[in-house]
Length: 221
Ligand SMILES: [Zn+2]
Image (cartoon, rainbow, N blue to C red; front, side, top):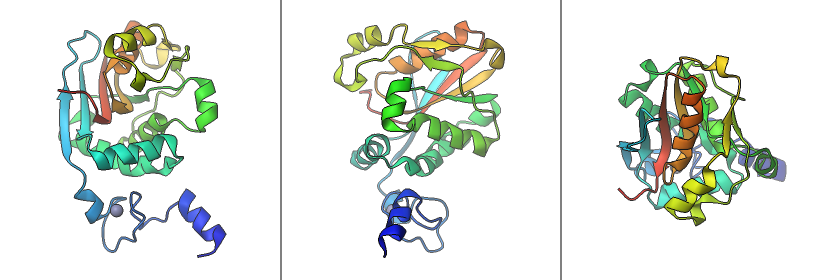
Protein backbone atom coordinates (compact mmCIF):
# COMPACT_ATOMS: atom_id res chain seq x y z
CA UNK A 1 0.00 0.00 0.00
CA UNK A 2 1.41 3.40 -0.97
CA UNK A 3 1.87 6.08 1.66
CA UNK A 4 -1.00 8.19 0.37
CA UNK A 5 -3.34 5.21 0.23
CA UNK A 6 -2.47 4.07 3.74
CA UNK A 7 -2.79 7.62 5.03
CA UNK A 8 -6.23 8.05 3.54
CA UNK A 9 -7.19 4.61 4.83
CA UNK A 10 -6.21 5.83 8.29
CA UNK A 11 -8.16 9.05 8.04
CA UNK A 12 -11.15 7.74 6.11
CA UNK A 13 -11.45 3.97 6.46
CA UNK A 14 -13.39 2.33 3.65
CA UNK A 15 -17.01 1.35 4.04
CA UNK A 16 -16.46 -2.37 4.46
CA UNK A 17 -13.69 -2.02 7.04
CA UNK A 18 -14.13 -2.68 10.75
CA UNK A 19 -13.35 0.65 12.40
CA UNK A 20 -11.90 -0.98 15.50
CA UNK A 21 -9.46 -3.52 14.02
CA UNK A 22 -9.37 -2.33 10.37
CA UNK A 23 -10.02 -5.83 9.08
CA UNK A 24 -11.92 -6.23 5.86
CA UNK A 25 -15.54 -7.19 6.42
CA UNK A 26 -17.19 -9.62 4.08
CA UNK A 27 -20.96 -9.68 4.11
CA UNK A 28 -21.18 -8.04 7.53
CA UNK A 29 -23.32 -4.97 8.17
CA UNK A 30 -22.22 -1.78 9.90
CA UNK A 31 -18.79 -0.68 11.11
CA UNK A 32 -17.94 -3.40 13.63
CA UNK A 33 -16.75 -6.88 12.61
CA UNK A 34 -18.01 -10.07 14.23
CA UNK A 35 -14.78 -10.67 16.05
CA UNK A 36 -14.74 -7.16 17.64
CA UNK A 37 -18.43 -7.54 18.46
CA UNK A 38 -17.60 -10.44 20.75
CA UNK A 39 -15.46 -8.04 22.83
CA UNK A 40 -18.36 -5.64 23.39
CA UNK A 41 -20.63 -6.33 26.35
CA UNK A 42 -23.95 -4.55 25.99
CA UNK A 43 -25.50 -3.17 29.15
CA UNK A 44 -28.18 -0.62 28.08
CA UNK A 45 -28.20 0.27 31.74
CA UNK A 46 -29.81 3.15 33.54
CA UNK A 47 -27.87 5.24 36.04
CA UNK A 48 -29.81 6.63 38.94
CA UNK A 49 -28.72 10.19 39.66
CA UNK A 50 -31.32 11.09 42.28
CA UNK A 51 -31.05 14.65 40.94
CA UNK A 52 -33.94 16.85 39.83
CA UNK A 53 -32.65 17.73 36.36
CA UNK A 54 -32.16 14.50 34.41
CA UNK A 55 -35.17 12.40 33.54
CA UNK A 56 -33.03 9.34 32.99
CA UNK A 57 -29.47 8.56 31.96
CA UNK A 58 -28.24 5.44 30.23
CA UNK A 59 -25.03 3.93 28.97
CA UNK A 60 -24.72 1.34 26.23
CA UNK A 61 -21.83 -0.96 27.04
CA UNK A 62 -19.71 -2.22 29.95
CA UNK A 63 -16.44 -0.34 30.54
CA UNK A 64 -14.14 -3.25 29.74
CA UNK A 65 -10.60 -3.20 28.42
CA UNK A 66 -11.61 -3.15 24.76
CA UNK A 67 -13.95 -0.19 25.22
CA UNK A 68 -11.52 1.64 27.47
CA UNK A 69 -8.70 1.37 24.93
CA UNK A 70 -10.86 2.38 22.01
CA UNK A 71 -12.35 5.37 23.82
CA UNK A 72 -8.81 6.48 24.53
CA UNK A 73 -7.96 6.24 20.83
CA UNK A 74 -11.17 8.07 19.97
CA UNK A 75 -10.53 10.97 22.35
CA UNK A 76 -6.80 11.38 22.54
CA UNK A 77 -5.20 9.64 19.56
CA UNK A 78 -6.99 11.37 16.72
CA UNK A 79 -9.17 8.42 15.68
CA UNK A 80 -12.20 10.65 15.29
CA UNK A 81 -13.78 8.31 12.73
CA UNK A 82 -14.61 5.89 15.57
CA UNK A 83 -17.75 7.95 16.13
CA UNK A 84 -19.49 5.75 13.57
CA UNK A 85 -18.73 2.53 15.45
CA UNK A 86 -19.56 4.01 18.84
CA UNK A 87 -22.60 5.72 17.35
CA UNK A 88 -23.94 2.29 16.39
CA UNK A 89 -23.74 1.23 20.02
CA UNK A 90 -25.66 4.33 21.12
CA UNK A 91 -28.35 3.67 18.51
CA UNK A 92 -28.85 0.17 19.92
CA UNK A 93 -29.64 1.65 23.32
CA UNK A 94 -31.88 4.28 21.78
CA UNK A 95 -33.89 1.53 20.06
CA UNK A 96 -34.07 -0.72 23.07
CA UNK A 97 -35.11 2.08 25.43
CA UNK A 98 -37.55 3.57 22.93
CA UNK A 99 -35.83 6.94 23.29
CA UNK A 100 -36.49 8.12 19.78
CA UNK A 101 -40.20 8.60 20.49
CA UNK A 102 -39.47 10.50 23.68
CA UNK A 103 -37.09 13.15 22.42
CA UNK A 104 -37.34 16.17 20.10
CA UNK A 105 -33.67 16.97 19.65
CA UNK A 106 -30.11 15.84 20.30
CA UNK A 107 -27.39 17.72 22.21
CA UNK A 108 -23.82 17.03 23.28
CA UNK A 109 -21.36 17.95 26.00
CA UNK A 110 -19.45 20.94 24.65
CA UNK A 111 -15.72 21.53 24.96
CA UNK A 112 -14.06 24.77 25.89
CA UNK A 113 -13.04 26.50 22.66
CA UNK A 114 -9.36 26.38 23.60
CA UNK A 115 -9.48 22.65 24.20
CA UNK A 116 -11.39 22.18 20.96
CA UNK A 117 -8.69 24.09 19.13
CA UNK A 118 -6.06 21.78 20.63
CA UNK A 119 -7.86 18.52 19.88
CA UNK A 120 -9.40 19.55 16.59
CA UNK A 121 -12.73 17.84 17.25
CA UNK A 122 -15.21 17.20 20.02
CA UNK A 123 -15.86 13.46 20.25
CA UNK A 124 -19.26 13.99 21.92
CA UNK A 125 -20.32 16.31 19.14
CA UNK A 126 -19.37 13.73 16.50
CA UNK A 127 -21.45 11.10 18.29
CA UNK A 128 -24.43 13.45 18.69
CA UNK A 129 -24.25 14.51 15.02
CA UNK A 130 -24.32 10.87 13.97
CA UNK A 131 -27.28 10.06 16.21
CA UNK A 132 -29.14 13.20 15.13
CA UNK A 133 -28.72 12.27 11.47
CA UNK A 134 -29.80 8.67 11.98
CA UNK A 135 -32.87 9.64 14.05
CA UNK A 136 -33.66 12.57 11.81
CA UNK A 137 -33.91 14.89 14.83
CA UNK A 138 -32.31 18.33 14.99
CA UNK A 139 -28.98 18.84 16.69
CA UNK A 140 -28.66 21.55 19.32
CA UNK A 141 -25.36 22.95 18.19
CA UNK A 142 -24.41 26.24 19.77
CA UNK A 143 -26.74 26.47 22.73
CA UNK A 144 -24.58 24.95 25.43
CA UNK A 145 -21.29 26.69 26.01
CA UNK A 146 -18.37 25.62 28.14
CA UNK A 147 -17.41 28.91 29.71
CA UNK A 148 -14.78 27.78 32.16
CA UNK A 149 -11.67 25.71 31.44
CA UNK A 150 -11.79 22.89 33.96
CA UNK A 151 -9.11 20.53 35.13
CA UNK A 152 -9.14 17.02 33.68
CA UNK A 153 -12.09 15.42 35.49
CA UNK A 154 -10.60 11.95 35.63
CA UNK A 155 -7.93 13.11 38.06
CA UNK A 156 -10.40 14.42 40.62
CA UNK A 157 -12.57 12.85 43.28
CA UNK A 158 -16.35 13.07 43.29
CA UNK A 159 -16.74 16.19 45.46
CA UNK A 160 -13.91 18.03 43.77
CA UNK A 161 -15.48 17.28 40.42
CA UNK A 162 -18.74 18.91 41.34
CA UNK A 163 -16.94 21.97 42.64
CA UNK A 164 -14.75 22.03 39.57
CA UNK A 165 -17.76 21.99 37.24
CA UNK A 166 -19.94 24.50 39.01
CA UNK A 167 -20.79 27.35 36.70
CA UNK A 168 -18.64 25.94 33.90
CA UNK A 169 -21.54 25.56 31.42
CA UNK A 170 -23.96 28.15 30.16
CA UNK A 171 -27.05 27.81 27.96
CA UNK A 172 -27.87 30.44 25.33
CA UNK A 173 -30.66 30.95 22.77
CA UNK A 174 -33.38 29.48 24.98
CA UNK A 175 -36.05 29.70 22.27
CA UNK A 176 -34.27 26.93 20.32
CA UNK A 177 -35.01 24.33 23.00
CA UNK A 178 -37.93 25.77 24.93
CA UNK A 179 -40.40 23.02 25.92
CA UNK A 180 -38.29 20.40 24.11
CA UNK A 181 -37.25 16.96 25.23
CA UNK A 182 -33.49 16.72 24.74
CA UNK A 183 -31.18 13.72 24.42
CA UNK A 184 -27.79 14.74 25.80
CA UNK A 185 -24.87 12.66 24.49
CA UNK A 186 -21.43 12.15 25.99
CA UNK A 187 -18.71 9.56 25.44
CA UNK A 188 -18.37 8.36 29.02
CA UNK A 189 -20.12 8.97 32.32
CA UNK A 190 -17.52 9.16 35.06
CA UNK A 191 -19.50 10.60 37.96
CA UNK A 192 -22.44 12.06 36.13
CA UNK A 193 -21.54 15.54 37.36
CA UNK A 194 -21.12 16.88 33.81
CA UNK A 195 -24.49 15.58 32.64
CA UNK A 196 -26.20 16.91 35.73
CA UNK A 197 -24.63 20.33 35.36
CA UNK A 198 -25.67 20.59 31.70
CA UNK A 199 -29.20 19.35 32.27
CA UNK A 200 -29.47 21.96 35.00
CA UNK A 201 -28.68 24.84 32.63
CA UNK A 202 -30.99 23.37 29.97
CA UNK A 203 -33.89 22.96 32.39
CA UNK A 204 -33.36 26.43 33.81
CA UNK A 205 -33.36 27.69 30.23
CA UNK A 206 -36.83 26.23 29.61
CA UNK A 207 -36.25 22.67 28.31
CA UNK A 208 -39.09 20.26 29.05
CA UNK A 209 -36.85 17.34 29.92
CA UNK A 210 -33.35 15.94 29.45
CA UNK A 211 -32.28 12.34 28.91
CA UNK A 212 -28.61 11.38 29.10
CA UNK A 213 -26.83 8.75 27.02
CA UNK A 214 -23.17 7.74 26.94
CA UNK A 215 -21.23 4.90 25.34
CA UNK A 216 -20.12 3.62 28.69
CA UNK A 217 -19.66 4.47 32.35
CA UNK A 218 -16.74 4.02 34.70
CA UNK A 219 -18.96 4.65 37.72
CA UNK A 220 -18.83 1.99 40.41
CA UNK A 221 -22.39 0.82 40.81
ZN1 LIG B 1 -12.98 -5.64 14.13
